[in-house]
Image (cartoon, rainbow, N blue to C red; front, side, top):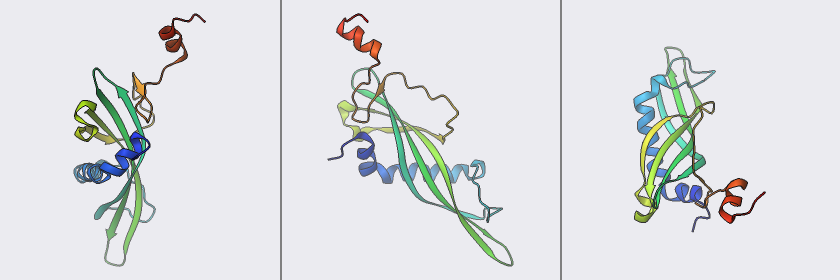
Length: 150
């Protein structure tokens, strides 16, 4: 059994997440900022593999959760011209916004949105859960819950 929510997603949903990102890449290939030293104009591309890097989970009412999955994707790009062909591997990070209901089982989660991950944006996570889906409390919250003054 997986030891964390991230490991659970990697083991159980890698293929589904790959398909979602593949669809996004197909629809947005001209808007992705892929950098390559050997390919100037992309004639063909293929999503080669993905790696789940981080999962941020927010607690919601009842047994509902929302979570962002940060994924690094390896995309092979190719360029053809009269004299030689070039290919290269580019890496792009994506954020998948998801939600699920633990009462229905985590398998019932759905992807709400996919976008290119930008670490400069402030993604707010209000009621943060650990990777084991346990609430993370600040020190002031601990004192408030235990009725201890500090």
